Image 1 (cartoon, rainbow, N blue to C red):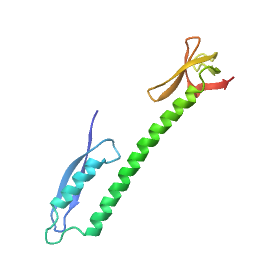
Image 2 (image 1 turned 60 degrees about the vertical axis):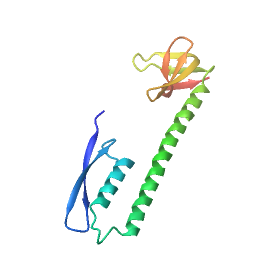
Image 3 (image 1 turned 90 degrees about the vertical axis):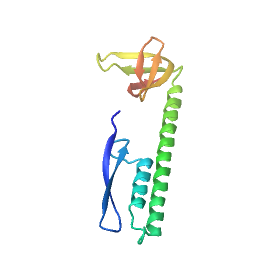
Image 4 (image 1 turned 60 degrees about the horizontal axis):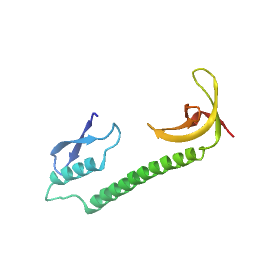
Length: 141
């Protein structure tokens, strides 16, 4: 896995500028560790005679707290959606389904004997030893 780096400029109250490299998990979002690195660098290079305004510091901490809560909520929602999809797939067990093979155009019918979540997709295994993508199911009876 390749880590991407971003250089952020931290401005102190004097004319001195400093740069710090922070790691990114992907090309768009800085994680909480990167936020703390930026904050520490900002505090490290501030002018002791004119420190950071308390309200600005509190606002940054509130933004971070909000961001972290949103990230946690996103992770929980992703887990919930995965469980929901598995539950919906499990409701197909014992039911007859129909789908069309994308390569041959053949209509495939069979009874669902099990379902699985593999590599981000839900699959149904039919009694005739066929594995089908649940999103391709055209009929349930």
